[in-house]
Image (tube, rainbow, N blue to C red; front, top):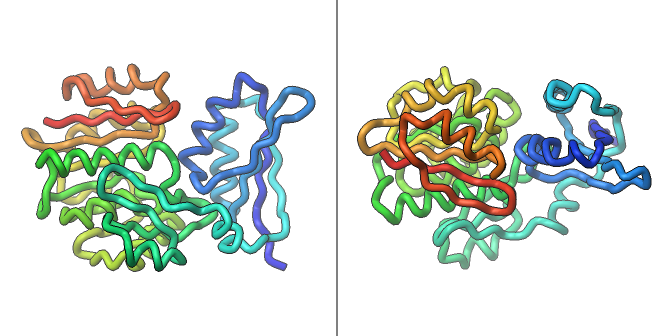
Length: 284
């Protein structure tokens, strides 16, 4: 029987928020969470990719050095069949609908723009609040005429490719990059499932330095607040001025002011919130 990598994390109540924030962006497909009799919380993350688990373990240890972690192997369940039990369509904004590949009937009958995402054990499926916030931001910008067909975009940390696919389906042309090769493979798979041409969405491994055609009309970055702040000067330079738009998410509401200060040169952003997460949108 095939096996999965399993990372277990035991956390004190005061550490659960930061762990949840890290996991939400790294493993948007979900994780197990259990309250222990001791008052601590047990998190379990599964992945086919051992390097993914090692990098996640390193990230968690760097943020919380005293964290109790263990990494081992467990028998693999039927991942797709499990997802079929829990995956539900996600409406975002007024025009997008996120679906799984087996939802042919929903795809055939929807009046929305379908975005089909193949569930993987290391990448998001569009259910997380930060993804929904970014899709809604795209929807609003399109309605306002701030983005339109033919414009160019850059999607930093593309993951499953969901935001780049959405932008391409609105007629924009751009590039999605991710540092994880498995994310790139997943984004390419999803690009093909959605029948988005490579010319409309180029996907490659890399970070901000891989931006080839900046400054862009639209820049998307749904990553953690800390790297967003670190990259602020270079990321701002990739946004076309005047007329460009910058959409940031992966930001907890409690981190919003810090991120806004890092991008103060762009003025005040529009802020949207869903649960404990926010998006920041600048229209230049």
